[in-house]
Length: 406
Image (cartoon, rainbow, N blue to C red):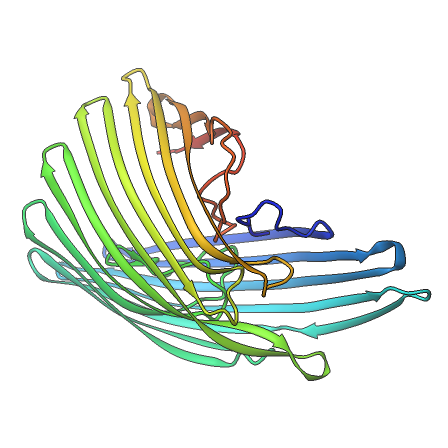
């Protein structure tokens, strides 16, 4: 469930359940050092449930079940040469989905009505990316992808997506990047794919709603100021056409579309004043502007983040990091139950993360102990991507073991 901005904006009668089992197999075959074939197979069996007990004492409830069996198969070929790197691939996803809904109507004689709707989906995709080094200090990315979907709920769709990107180093220590590309939110199992996740350093895969169409364009500069100081600035915009569903005749669902815009800006400064010390300062700005017909809880939102990082590395293998972060969020939000209940909110606060790590002998990995939101700061903040949270609402301790085998 999405973390909401106002702590009281929740529905206590709602219960979410999720059980998922996943199997993944991968393979790699090297025909030659310049020709590599990759393969991936993923299977998922998932049961999700949302139950709302409105009037449990009188038999009123809504019970929604989302069983799903899905698999994906992907193949990718990598070809490398002096002036051209070529990445080609194709994939298929087959998903057997259902919406099993049971409604309990309260009264002296409670009534239950059940409806099962098939939501099967087949998604085929193919792509090709060419990284062309036409000049000694410049690389162009030329790509094209195709998505073809068919299934229930009016999801038949074919879309061609061009990809353009460039990386240019006009002077020593200066790198300019730019990109323009179109995407269609792929049907992914466990959000994993072999396809390239970025074009010229700009991310093209986001955890948007399935079938979201998007154009993204941006520019960036990365600069080496001195031997130990690096800086950079990046700006981009993503214009999306987002699908949503409304009830139709006979219990069916009809697909509608609306427009969203997202803006992203970031700047950073890295420094290593001492071989054992690393310092960084980063600024990130995000703006969301959404159509009120379907805003998913957020109509407008501005988020500013300033992060200060300090890391110390000891020859013994010990290291420590401290990361204070300033947050400022200002937006217009919809009510969780009543979407027409719109109100504005703003909050700014600091959080602190800290960790201590030890490098295992012979570079076999790391063991880390740390805490996020170390001082248990209380705040108002809406988390847009709940599957990839950027901030912890409560103090959280963790122990992490990372192993690497040469």
